[in-house]
Image 1: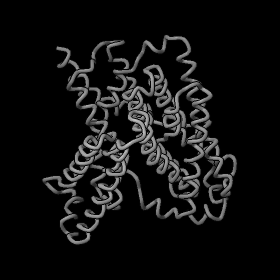
Image 2: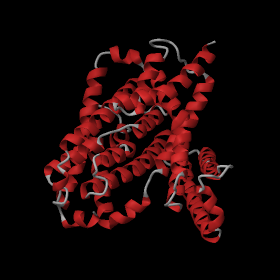
Image 3: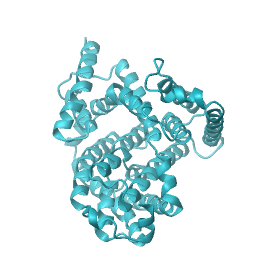
Length: 393
């Protein structure tokens, strides 16, 4: 009976929650996590961790990671040029340094460095677009920093987890082998697309009845996930790199991106986030120091990004622009939860700390875009800045 109820509740929630979220002007993910907490065993008891739910949530998780790589816009990275990429890399490296120091001051283990280093391209892009700042110097600097951080943090977290789980040794050879396989697939795909452009055009045909574009994406994802399992590498990295490989080869994806997002975000990815809420340890909130720890984690996560964004002062942006960039980059959602899930599975994070990370995601995903809109300078001031920033616009 619980199994039937869970499926019905999941179906209704996946349909209704995005509608409610749009009315409240909140990210749908936030409501999905909160709904999972409310409907989970700790409160209403409508949802439980059934085998079916876990399987769908796992598939949703892999699709989420695939889309995280799939959404990387290599055209923007290339247009930014070496200067903006170096600036973005500097922000990422400073983020790691400050995150490590903040985690140490809070008394957490080193894996918290990866948690605090994350950002959310999925929140940065729509916020920049909605405020009309996507193509401005500040918007481009923020976007490139977010893209590099998403990409490099997941790789760093996976490497850290592998070393922590199995130590230094031959087991780490799976990592370079996976990357060699990815490079081979990239070269083969690029060559085939060059030789048979007409065949590959079908992948992006909105009227294709066989949906070969969707099938190809899922084929790549499962190939890399299976290879990751075989090489003892985290499956989410394989899924993420599959999406990245596709995005690198096919820069113009047309309606395929919307169709794939519709397929994934329409049901399976919401189930993953609802399952995060179902597993949320509500009892942890009553334990001494947990809420205070969550507040300190949120403050630290924000200060880490603001501090790292100070690099932008060196390339001509003013203090207000730097502050607004740091605030927007502090928004965390999908990736921070993925990294926390990895940490709990490998016993690198406690359930209490995972609960604090979920609270961090909820609070920053709601507040950071709102504060950015208030802090970001008027559009007329965007043109004032360093020559490098002006060139990037």
